[in-house]
Length: 135
Image 1 (tube, one colour):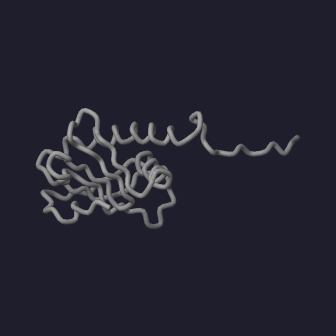
Image 2 (tube, helix red, strand yellow):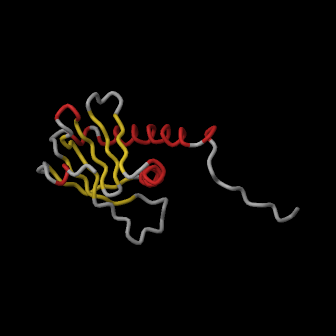
Image 3 (cartoon, rainbow, N blue to C red):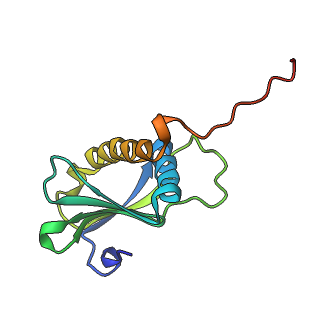
């Protein structure tokens, strides 16, 4: 597991929110694809997103996986509204890291969708339809 985001000095801390769509999608992906997912970020050359249960970390592979930014401390205790955003803590390790946060989340959503679609035969989900009791 990646832990350097806990060891490197943080440039700035911010309170943040993750859209429920993104948070829920990552939780499903972590259950189906493994406890740590590495996603190379298109058009952000050497950057990669590492998804873990307790942190989502943007790292620069060209500089020995040094963290650029991270979403941590997800406020999920007693969470029963799956459609509401999840509060979190954003750690910035670089002065310009906030410029790519939204772009990374959008890329993550697309990449996870592709990864999960590959896991299902013919793109079908494993949702079982309700039986019609009228018949």
